[in-house]
Length: 377
Image (cartoon, rainbow, N blue to C red; front, side, top):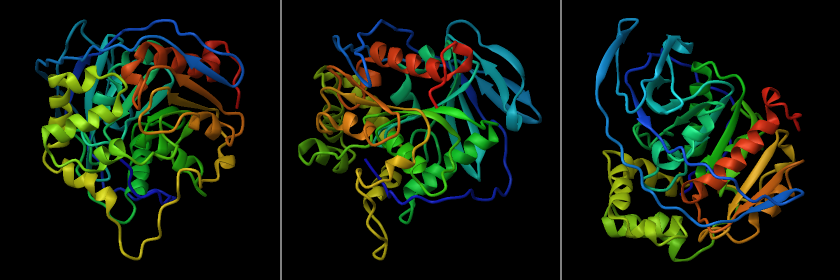
């Protein structure tokens, strides 16, 4: 799914903020495996696709921070507890899972996942009906949290974040909201990884006249190419809040037929897509003011403006984007690289997590002084 591509600079003023309202921890997947990498500026990752839908159960306990009640649940080893962090957020780290957190950003309820310690990595999920931070990154967070401090927000309209409808500048609103989210958490510079809409949002900001996100380096996964017209594209736009329609979305997103055949997985995405206000907030992307200019096409951005290390990742069996789009995009970004994850669809971080996690850690480690790799930009 996509919304308005109009870039917008600057940050909105905050009328006041509140601290964490809720926190609970969840175990994530720890699967990792070596991947075959090519040489030069692009690579191909090969192997079989995996299918292990996650199942989550949460217990409850509670603590009090600064007069505000916050709750948590622990699955597996108990999370370590530190002191209070930026913006009054209780600092908890766990490499065995991730915490569910909530922050009020510019008056908007913002849910996010957090795990690990070290340099910050911000994960931006896709924009299809039913998307969320957990659904999009549950196979990624634990792997990255072994070395990095990971934040995965539900973008506005998705998951447990505020259901906001904006017919004027939906993409710009989400980008500015993410910038304020980072500022409140004290994130001045971070690695960003985006899938689909999340990737397009990164490209929109880093090519804007006045970028607002604190991007130090970025990975774009299956976002930035021209979506091909056809039944799979229509499935993304024509969701009518029924299970068959959600099954068509899942079919479009994955190469493996195991995903749409998994009743629990389809139901999980369906429940997310039909939460109160979710359909309206996401469907708003297809509408715009009559006098609004058309958004730029995927290839119309000034990619030469991007001045941060960039990796562009393509799903080798993506049903939505044409083969070879990642290499073409990377060629327009100074010093960018591309990689193809063989046998994966539009969400390779879910379908081939071991391969994508290896790519991500290799790329991030090369940008991090602590890793011993020289920085490339």
